[in-house]
Length: 235
Image (cartoon, rainbow, N blue to C red; front, side, top):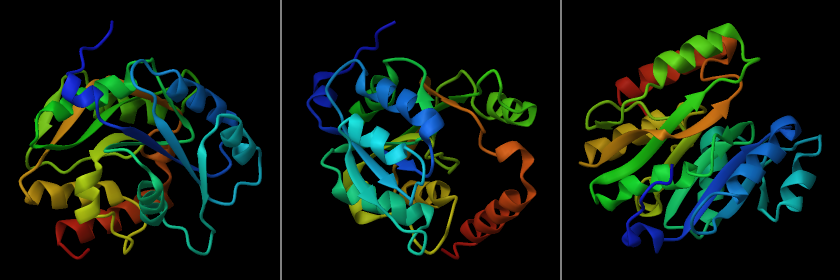
C-alpha cells in the first residue's frame, strides 16, 4: 500500500549512506531496492572500508557516489561522518550493505514523519531472513515491533535502518570517540536538545545477522562498554 507523503517532505532532497565491508553477497539486492524506491530519486553514497571482494564494483555499477575509509582510520562513527559530509540531501537515510529494504516504500515510510518539526530522527523495523540464526530472529522480532512510537527519553536508535535531519548532524556529528553504538550516543544528545525520535515499523529492512550478531560475546562486551559510557555521559 502506498504511503501518503506531504509535499513539504517530497520537495526535500534525500541521500542514503551505506557502509560496506565485503558485502558482495547482499549489496546488489540492497542497491537495487534503494534505486527502485517509490518517490523522489535519492542520492546513494557508499563508504567502503577496504573491501577485497566485488563490493566497490557493484556500487559503481549502480552509479553510487563512492568514498573510502582505510582500516587504520576506520570506526563506525567516522565512516558515517564522511558519508554525511559528502551527501547533498536534507534528509539522510542510513543503512548497511547487508540490509535490504523490504519494499519500495522504505524511504517514504521513514520520511513521512519529518512533517513534524520536532522529529529529529526516525528508525525503522528490521526483519530476519529465513536462514538467519535463531538468536537473531528472536532478537529482531523482540526488539522491532509493529506499533509506531515516539521517543522523548528512550534513546534506543539503530543506524542499520534510520533517517535523520542533516541540520542536526551539522550541529552534532556522530562522536568519533566511540566505535559502535554511535547511534544511541547521538540519539541521546538530540533528545536532550528537545527533539523526538520516531520508530516507524512500516519502513522495514531485512537484516541477516540482526543486532546482536548471533550472540557474539566479544561484540556484546564492546557494546556494553559503550552503553555504560553513554549512560554516564562520558562520550
